[in-house]
Each structure stands twice: as structure tokens, then as C-alpha cells.
Image (cartoon, rainbow over all chains, first blue to last red; front, side, top):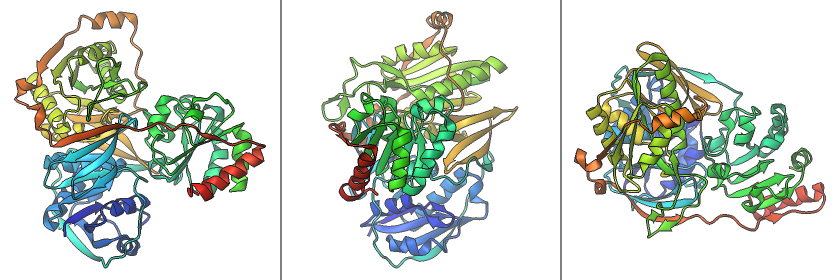
Length: 310
Length: 256
């Protein structure tokens, strides 16, 4: 059976939900869960439960975490030494970056941010033009490189008997690039692009401090909090929270837009959400024409009520 | 300081896409713009050159019509431009990178290359990595903060969960820009007039011995994603509306 590598991302030692979705995308092939130099003791059981036939802990003499180029080199050695014919990762800041480096070094095709994948056929479906169209792409290469859009594939349990093996990679630092620090900008907030529920505040939020109302609701929902471009430009929220063109592209199962008018540029970043709920005082807001459920009302009345009912 | 800015000619994000044939789109009647992220790239390049001297060269691989898009962008302060022409709507990212590399090398190596973090048409997020690799340059994508000293550049990139990596790179290097890096300027009338006289050197992708049909990713089908229609509007008091919303999300949609 063909071997598929899945780049696993951990958070506080636990496997990220998005990585489990990528493992499910690889179901049917022999899944090698690849972990870059981290403690896998807490993650091992989850990985085998979701189908890992091998858990490969990749290490090197150099510190892999100081340079993504070294991580890419290490992943390439894993592909070669394990004889993998596919490598999948989450389409996010880490996975997307590493896979682009791997593809560039190997001079092989890479398909990114896919919502459906057929590994055997080397065929994928992905968004073009900000979700206005889907393209079906077919890849011609010996090793199939692909990143999967978070939340597009629901993780499914598929128990396996995976063992942890170590792989010592030989990497070479060209001395051109180094991660010198990782700054924590805000308290451990849920990652917007990976969240399965998102509640977003638009211009109608009126002030930065009013986001606390959305935070309270988000806490009950297990959601991440986003902002529209109008709210970011007005200084109510940082750019890291912006959903839409020039911000983040998200694809949660539930997207609740509070006081967001629904500009084309906003939809560019959230169109592929499964369910879109809009709450807006203006009955003529464009968002009501493109959502699944709508409530015409003042967000300062509706949102606290929602928090209470959850 | 010589800086290249890779700029892509893309359909305006506000328009509706019409599919033509099985795997193409109607592009003759459509408004095109510079890829929005590339404007952050161009602004950064222009401000560095304004401060330190040198030149900003825009480089585009695209259809002949891209010349008009380049002309508009040049008003932001680029000195000249190179257009490598191809008729292919969806040129393979490896071939695009190969064409960019050939044109850049033919013109003379820069100190920095700026691109957008990705393009809003094909959303491939990889051409700049391939270009950097081919030229032997370090690359960081999604850069929102940049400081330059003599031989190195320090950048920040967001990695999610409220964290930012601080990365140091040696020059020459390639930077993928995103929002936050700067505020792209609106060109003044004078700058627009001046841009009309600037050079756009046009070449053909075949001049570099590249065959656009040699891509290894084939687009088999392009299909329109239907827009949602007919939202269910909830009615009654706020209490009724919210109670019903929570019920449908739990029971009907099973997303809570």
C-alpha cells in the first residue's frame, strides 16, 4: 500500500484538529504521521486513533525550529527514506510555508488549500477567485504534494497500531535565514483560520472594547473572534483578526457575522463557510442576500441574548 | 538598492467570474487590477528606494493586456517595468517562476525582491518560493513588519494563535508582503502623468525558451460556486429569534 506522509502540527503537545482532518483526507493509504522535533508522548494515542500506521519523529543535530528551510530539508529526507509517494499538510501559516519550501526544493508541483482530494488520482478541488469558482486540478508528479483547507474534511476515527520511530535528518544551514524570536501578541486566542466556529464583528461594533461582548459569546461557542475590514480600518480590531480579502480566508462550519454589511471583499474570505448567520440592524444589508439565517436587529441586544441561550 | 516587484494582473475581485469552455474564464470584457497584496509589495519597495536611492522595477508574467495594469501601478513610483507575455490564463507556477528568474537574471540581480503573499485569482501561494529557490535567495512570506539595516533585513510574520515569528534574513532576499506592512499610496495626478512616459519592456515567454504548455498541474475543470440564496429570516421578539436560531443550529444544521 502506498505511503502518505501527513505533517502533524501540535499545540501544547496535543494534535491540532486540522491535522486530524488532513489524516482523514489520507485515509485508504498507509499514513505516516510526521512530527518535527516535538514531544509526541501526549499526541501518540490520538494519532493512532485517527489512522497513523507509523509516527515518525523527525530530528536533526541542528535546531529544526530556528529555520523553516531546515524543516523543509528534513521533510524531504523523510519522503525519500520512507519511500512516501504523497505528503499532505494543513494549509495554514506553518504547513503552507513548509510545503511551498519542499515543493520549491524538489521542483515538484504543489496544490494548495484544497477542499477535496483524491490521492490515488492525484486530483484535487480548490478555490479560485476567492471562492467564486472551484477548480479541479490534476497533478503530474512522482510525489504528490498537497495542502488541505482547515475544516474542509471532517476528522474521522480509524484506529490503527502506530509505533513511534525516530528519523535523524541531515540538514544544512545556508546561514541566510533565522527565526530569532517568537512573540506572543495576544493571549492564547483560538486560531482564526483553524477555528470551526467564528463570530465576527463589523463596523456596527462601534468601539474596540465592545469586542468583549463577542468574546463572551465566543467562549460559550468555543469560537474564534474575527473582524471585518471596516472594523479593522476604524481601529476597533487588529489586522490579525481581519476576515476577507487582504485578511484571512476562513472556512468554519458556523460563521456568525454581527453588524457586518457583507461586502464582496468580506465574502472573499468566508464564502466557503458551511453555515452563515447574519445579525444586522439594516434590513437592506447585502449580507442578508447571501447568508443562511438572518436576524434583523441590534447586535447589542441580539448577541448578549445569544450568549445567554447557549 | 535595486528592487524588483513581482506584480500579477488579476480580475477585479468585485466582478463575477464567467466560466468559458470547461476550464477557462471570460477575460476580454473584464476589469483587471494589480493583485491586491502586490500593492503592499510595491509600496514597500518604493518607500525603501525613496529613502535609500536606487530603482524599483516591476516585473509581470501575464497576458499582453497586463501592460495597462502595470502602467497604472507604475504611478505609485516604480521606475520601469518588464512584461513577459504569455497567452496562458493559468500559467503553471513553476513556469511563472522560471520566466521571472530568467527575466530578472537578464536584467541584473537585485538587492531585494518583493511580491504579494499570494494571488487572489489562482490562490497558489508558491510562485515566490520557487523564484527565491531558483535564484538561491532566502524567502519569508506574509510579512507585516520590516526593518532594514546594512546587510540584513528583520521581518515579522504572523503564524496564528496570536503569535508572530521574528526572522532575520541576509540580503539579497525575497519578501512576500501582506496587509499591515504599509498603507499603499493613491498616486497623485502628476505621478500618473509621469508614469505614462516610463518604460515597459515587453518580451515573450518563448524568448526564454519556456513552453507554457509544459506545466505539471492541469486545470481540468472550472466551475462556478452558486451563491447562497433565500436566507431564512428569523422573526418574532429578540428572545424568539435567538431561541429559534439556537434550535436550528443544534437540531437541523448540527453545527453546535
